[in-house]
Length: 369
Ligand code: G6P
Image 1 (cartoon, rainbow, N blue to C red):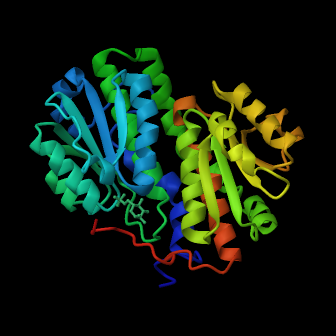
Image 2: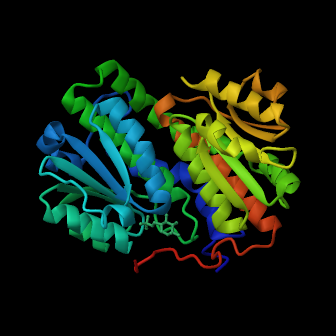
């Protein structure tokens, strides 16, 4: 057991630390440094269908659904195709409108989630084109799709998904770039910039992992609180949801993720001097607005833990704790900003004495509906 954990105390920690490698493995062979040549066999199989798609529907559950939400931003931004992200369990039972010009992307780490499999079977029966993004080779979802792309995260043992999420986001980024290139919605200059920056991501994730000891200290401070709020905007909104999910899953602390601007329509009522609020506030197009959201939390004495871009001089004056992550392109930010949130939930759960790798009531793969 300890050999399999490679010297780490838990599989989850090992898997968090494997991310520089698993992200690299998920893009290896699919793009070349400095160039604009992308090579995704699954995309090529459906090239024409992606070009003509009137809509992309993403079906998934849990963390994979959060990766799907990141993909909504990516695909709309880079490829200009409208995207809808659906909980597989809702989609399959609500008589959805599906046409032959729709592409349905099913995202699943295990490739065995019953609702996701049923959702894609339904879409297939209505004539949609099905694309799978799975981690487990030969899994049911991988076999039920005609084309797709594997994430190369390697086996994920911890029930709470970490490296599978960043691998999914990596593959979805490459897919959005492929579609955008083929549809002419992304310039060659922009594409090359993204290719270069994607190559830098493993190093930046490595750097974010060095925050481990610092985050453990933050976990000490908050390990006994009953509630947490996570806020983010734009590409960091799905990251807020994922951060909250990780904390719920393994520490059993109630946590909610919200789009930062939506806070005023409800969660703001919960904020007082006992409420920790994790705000993902990297330097991107919504930065100024997130800073105002932080001020709103501060005015109500909320305890702010901010994930910021290295060198930020504004937010440290407002937050109780600041976690600095390396700068990257806005569309790639989730790959870096999610890392400290994974570590935070891990350390809080360990300090609370929880069974991190096998949290109560949860299963790694849910093969019943
Ligand atoms: C379960 C797991 C989650 C996972 C979800 C979807 O709830 O505990 O970690 O995100 O299923 O699983 P999938 O294998 O389809 O990605």
